Image (cartoon, rainbow, N blue to C red; front, top):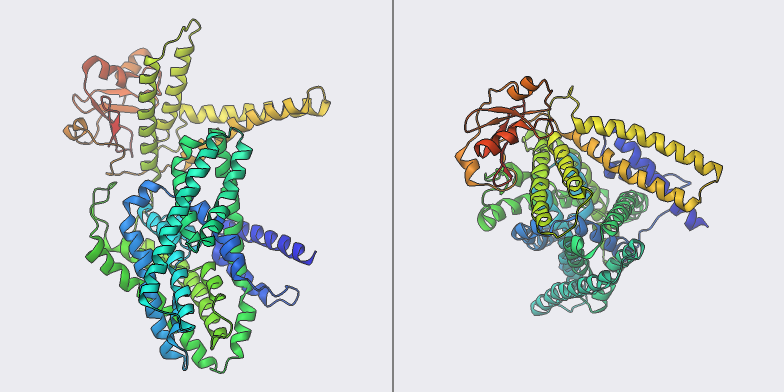
Length: 619
């Protein structure tokens, strides 16, 4: 009962701390660590010793799997060189550098133990870095590199730690280290591939979302245990399985299964991520107390902890710039068409926050290691120091260096373009189908696809005081859904309809409401912005008609017909101004069909994008 009560109390503290942090705009990871440190000194809070097996087997597989599912395999592959340089090269570089510092400052500490603590503090955390990076809105490519690095660097660090511990026992050779690393990496990849193949075959036989989700919950633990059973890297096995299953999910799973999996793993990741930070803080009191019993004295302990923290930060910065300019040689960004500036590299070097894996790995160091209590304090100092020093300063640095965050307007344009291209494929498929449509079903299908696309394009409207047709529809429909739900609940209370039927109807209303609420929230994030970035695919027509200042202020056809328009579009071939497809007249599209002029530009204030009618592309 005491353990159960402690777990419930831990969950409540995580939820309360996260909610309060969100309200006040403070990073939840840092707030929870501070709460844990405070709690570790309270007399009524039991002393919590975080065992390394709890973290490496119980927490790490689901956290890595949840992150891997959401990581784009395409983006991961596009950035594989910087990811590998950071997850392998930087970990080895940091291990040696921190090991040299610790060996020099702690008398009597051998090289194996010094390198062991170097390996412990070398890998940035998968949770800490991306949680803060996404919160402050770093460029997506930086977030992808940080995610990829943190997914793989634990494997390198754990192999380095295992090697250092073996060396302390006198079993060390360069050949053995190389073979051990190849076995861990290669075996992890093979087990991950095998787990992917098995789960993929099983999912083809499943139609129940509940069973599919259950398989998903088992997968990371099965992959991790199977790999470790054969002395391969469980970390790499989980990451490979998660990347491939996430990439193939639209093919292997039904829509219901994908939605259920996303919701479940988002919840699991939220609870575990925040619980991890609280657990880190709860270690503070006993780690500091044990270090106080060391024979080194507090002056030397503080010096070695501070030097280790500084070494971790400086070594990462020293690595990323040469790696970028000498090894990676980055080309132009595929989105902006420009070479990323040095400020991106600096932020990448600064975003090296450590987390629970560092602390858990420190507990793997044998208990008979000299000054082990100080080594544990070094690990705790690096975790807390990087999280607070780098985590708190990262938003300020991003603003000071003028590093742009993802633009909601560009995302809305890319989304509308992608939907338009998908609809084009759907129309082509519809033309190939054979059917006997005596009830106008095909026209209804086309109207629904058009209405969805119109709503996507309307999200680009930047006038805050203007309610688009889709906004008006959402507002009215949400009010009606509330009335419908209220009536259904009244009927449920009367007991005249079976409860299963009531649940099905309420579920239908919930699905519709969630779609409308999501679209409304996305629309509110689209702000007025002018951008020269290109979204979608380029084409010869867009290159032939560059953007220019539009002059049209009204739709002549709408004025003649006595109609109101939603948004205006200007033909870049002749200057004709017509209304958009969300308007009743759709005169811009009618002008294209009449003249064949392929490119139009938005004539709305604050909007800067063009559309090619022939190739369905935007710029």
